[in-house]
Image (cartoon, rainbow, N blue to C red; front, side):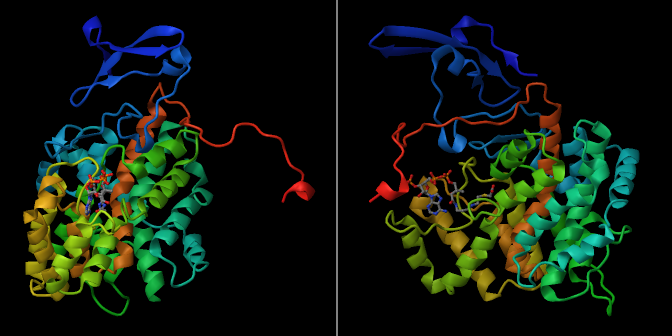
Length: 440
Ligand code: CMC
């Protein structure tokens, strides 16, 4: 629980000065475990008649959470107190899923039981098979993801009652278990290949690669280096505190909407190029740059204030130091390129050269614009043969557990209210209505 700092020295005091003179107000300060304290302004409007103004929520804490902690200046990311580097090194994805959902790492018996529980839910209702056929073959797979995940609320009626903790847990397991199947089928549909059903004797990552790349006419065995890389990518994207898509899930859920609808809203938010769409944007940018010789031209454009071009895969709202996930991802990227003998593939060579130049460039160094996790994930996916349009889909698969853990936490929070931000209105004040015949 948050603690109120009782020491009066550390209360936030504001003075409003106008023609009526000075009015003074005090607000308590709440202390978390680590990270900045927060000014509790819940009574601000009632006390002062004023709202705060914070577009993009750069200074606003929207909830209390025990799941993930980020220190962007230090480059630290913790899930339930554990460093992401340790989780990526020593855990598999389902262990991290357990940690995020339940708050502790599982012991061996709990891990086994959890794996069995999740794999029992990997198949989709067979009718969903027909639902896919309503989409155009050339539909973007993120559009398919939004549609199919949203449609889950039309298929799984027995896990829609959000006031029942058991139903919430079943919905959570269903989402984690079915998301790789939904994603792989979105890909298969676009390829015109038959859907491949999940195999519960495989690990989460192996099963995903199997459903993506197996065809009925050939044996398929996932390359262990690629399966481990996929598992790591899933771990590194599992949760990231109150980012745009997670806040979207919380906001959608705050009205009491069902979990499938909320996760579908999260997927829609993730799709944007400033968020999950960045890994797709990285590859498109590399294709646009085309050759190493043109890198300086694009670096110059990224620095030019009058040019909207940005180096995709560089910079982060929170990390003003190297993103700890990007470090793990960089290693994984090099492992995958070595395993597949792709070091000399022109596009990947170009990416490595861009990374080298940007890390030395004064503009990027000064503004602390390091390569982010999307820079490397895009390159790894490309090397694995995953089409660009599927990149953000993979992010959505991995992030589902974060969304669902945060959604559960919100539902259980006694302070939870429907999310309802206010605004600074700058439009017309009330004015007289003009009938159509009198409008010039
Ligand atoms: N290329 C060139 N300049 C940049 C870049 C970039 N990628 N990113 C930021 N800057 C500059 C920006 O022009 C600004 O300069 P100035 O102070 O002179 O006006 C300064 O750096 C600060 O940028 P900002 O836009 O105020 O920072 P922000 O926190 O609002 O933006 C960001 C963060 C991620 C949206 C931005 O860095 C960006 O657009 N990056 C490219 C897209 C990308 O890779 N997104 C993935 C983010 S990580 C995945 C995730 O967690 O969802």
